Length: 284
Ligand code: GUN
Image (cartoon, rainbow, N blue to C red; front, top):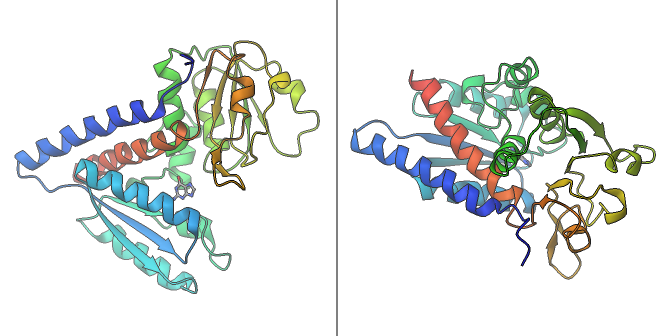
């Protein structure tokens, strides 16, 4: 058994337990309990699993979650109206619109319609802008969960070479900002990067989020680097694997995150933490 595997499930359970205690205290003090609105448009199998896991975590800690399931052909007007209602609802602390939205809906417009202090995903331009100018408020869940994982192994960010592979608004970009804000030298790569190994071979830390099974290879990485694998890919035999060839590289790295049981549970734990943060912002 390798002891260089960062157990995301264990770290996430600790965060959920802390949240649960906070909510029990609110309950004992007869305070209003936090509530999260989860908006889903259409039917997307992956989204359905993510949403179910998020709602289960809410139930586990005592957060009320209310799902708004809109049909695939929901109009932008209808969705914006719902968000406006939720923004004004004093009993709703957080609003999560599950992405991706069907192509006829403008996700930027929709996300930016959420009141930033209810934006549990941290995707609103106000929250991303705050992170950009080193004045973070609500931070995107997956990158922030990764920071928790790196802190748990006492990773020293300052001066380190960090390579982020994948440039999405959900993971890659906010991840780069989190690392930049902690003093790392950050290189962002994507699936068009020419000669990717010339970057990864110099990296002390690699965060990969491109959705390509077993993409990162042993020959591309430096001995004792840290690898954070955000990918969740289903193979033809129905098994789940990450974006790294885990078995191939586990003995070369100083630390690595497994899939499943790594970044996934941490994303959900931070969502719960963010919901409590929104509750505090909203009830100030
Ligand atoms: N789709 C994939 N990841 C996420 C996430 O973290 N939040 C939302 N809202 N949608 C997603």
